[in-house]
Image 1: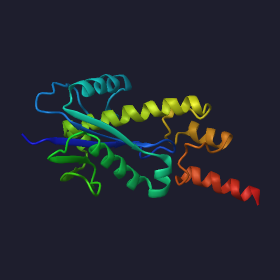
Image 2: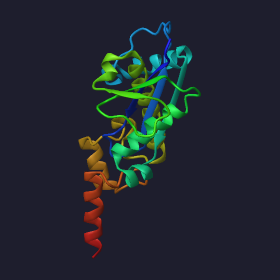
Image 3: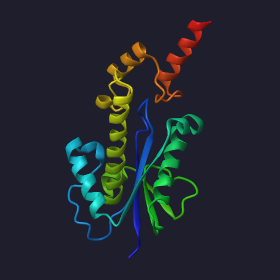
Image 4: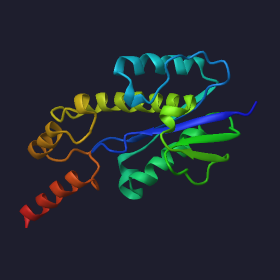
Length: 195
C-alpha cells in the first residue's frame, strides 16, 4: 500500500503572521468523518477535526515560514518552503505527496503531484488544510495578546476594514508583512512624512 501524503498551506493572503503548512498521511482505515476544505468548516468543527487527525493519522507535521522569510523570499516561495518543511518533518518518506494548488514545492524528498482544489477532493489534503489553518489561527491569537488593538484574534491578519483602520491608527507592527500592498504603502507614506 503506497504511503500518500496530503499537503496544504494556510495564510497566504493575510497582512501579518507566518504562513503555515501541514502534511498528513491518513492510512487506509483512519475513520475520520467530515474532512473538508478548512475554509468550508466552522472554527469549532476545524478544532475538533484537528484533534481527530492528530490522534488518527499515520503521520502528520506542521511547519511555517516566518514574516522575515516571507519578506526575503516572497509569499509564494515562503509557502513552498513551509510545505517542504512539513513533508520533511513527517518522520517518514511518503511514496507520493499530493499538493493543494497548481504547483509543487522544489527539492522534495519524494515525488509530488499538484491537485487544483485538492483540499475539497482529497481527504489527506483536507486534513492538511485543517491542521495548517488551526495552527495559524492559534498563532494569531498569541499575536493578538502581544500586539493588542490590531484585532488579530478576530480577522486573523486578513485585510479587513477594521484591520486596515487599526494599521492606520497604530502603525505597522513587527509581525506585519512589509512587502504586502497596504503595509508597504503605509511604510512608504511614513518615510515621505519624515522627509
